[in-house]
Amino acid sequence: MLIKFSVENFSSFNGRQNFSLLPGKGTLKGEHKTKKIKGISVLKTSVLFGANASGKSNLIKAIEFGKRLVLRGTNPESIIDYQKFRLDKNCTNKDSRIEYVIQHNGKNYAYGFVFDSTAIKEEWLFEVSLKSEVKIFERNINNSQIYDLDNIVKNIKSDEEKQFLKFIAKGTPNNQLFLNEIRTRKVKENVSKIEDILNVIDWFQNSLKVIFPDDKYNEGLKFELNQDEELLTTFEQFLKYFDTGINGVCLEKVDFDSVDVPKSILSKIKEDLLSKKSENVRASILSNRNTTYFLSIKDTDLVVEKFMTKHSVKGQDELEKFDTSDESDGTNRIMDFIPLLMDLLKGDNVFIIDEMERSLHPNLMYDLIDLFISKATNINSQLILASHESSVLTQKLLRKDEVWFVVKDNFGASKLHSLEDYNVRFDKEIRKDYLLGRFKAVPRIGNRNKLTILNHHLL
Image 1: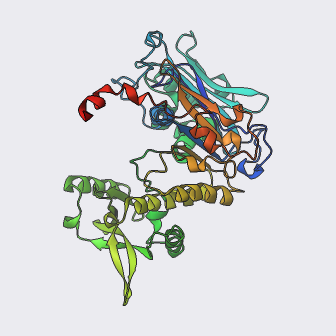
Image 2: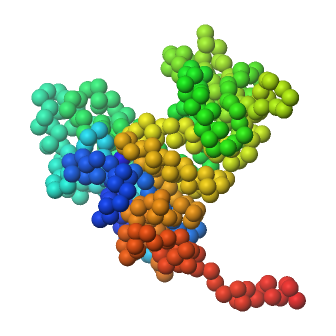
Image 3: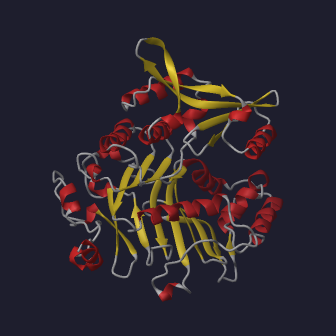
């Protein structure tokens, strides 16, 4: 679970801004909160609202940026590729900062780093509770002792393991996170008693999922369709529930040559699948026309199957199969969200989605959020959205502390604030006030009389 995220001097963010999932003072909708771990409870849902170019997407990009540095790292000879805040000259020589406060496997952690395009200047990991924090490690290139690993090393009995960990720390490139070095240098296999570090890496790798408007979510349910009839039935039930007109789905075997994907890519996938030495390993490829292919290995041969929908035909018992590229954008969007919703309800997942409403009817958007909230009473997962869809801006659906606004100040810097900051009654409908600009997160449209060029053309 994400407890809090802070960002500074990154993209449209200048001074440090905090996005918090900590519950406020309100007592209504208690089922929207998780049970406390070390005194800390977390909200399961949050929606960010704001005008175009206010910074909503930049906040999500910052969250994804940190995840990418942890899991993929930076090439040794490359710069750390990002953009500082450009509308304040003081930011040019100022470091940037990102921090995550997370909850995972029964513990709370604060992990973050200070950086510029050439180096990680600081990096830290603490275990935190409501009243205390315990350092796990700290890195500071301005300190003569670059790494403080004392709290890890004291629990390791083997001198050989201690030396190995210190060697990895000392050898971490300036432009690389220590967490990435731990992940890629087989430290897990050679050093014991680093469970907290591995736990945080696991959160980035297996819990945090960031989805942008053009992304397709292809993990989860779709990959198991041909192996689990119950999952297949669940998928079909969701499609009927959302009124798509689809009566079923299936995987249709197709010839290798008919796949609308470059053959070089298919060959590379085959090579990767064979190297994993598992007949159950699957991969998906998306064509430019919304078609999903599934690839697997059987007796060293590449088997290609196309994900298809099935519709009833008047006067015919047999269902007609459709390529998903023949379905509407909205239907394809729903099909993306079904496995996402299923994974959410499995627990231990944090989904952060930019522009979830794209191609979706407002009622569907509302219902997807409401469905998750209603089914997640005893489940620890989070659904965090950035949206323009004001129909979900209602206290019938969300708590005040689940609603956040992103606005730009007069100098072009993005600022975050919560509906919790406003004196709003629990039964007040807030959508109208939002559209009227009370919460500031709407476009400031100019005076159309100043569009003199239009007056000229209309004469």
